[in-house]
Length: 68
Image (tube, rainbow, N blue to C red):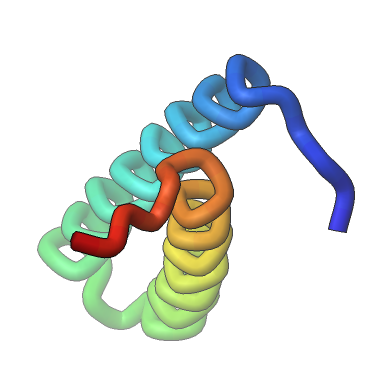
């Protein structure tokens, strides 16, 4: 994997978290207002899961694992 600077990593992490939150809001809105749009909801959930994986990966790279 490529190495990222800590500053760039935290900026990317913040952007991913914002996108994850935005997708969550969109999913809630769709469920409340357009429940028949299941295909779009499923695609958004898949994208949200991918973002969650990227967020977890970045957090592991940026935050040192401290063993007590």
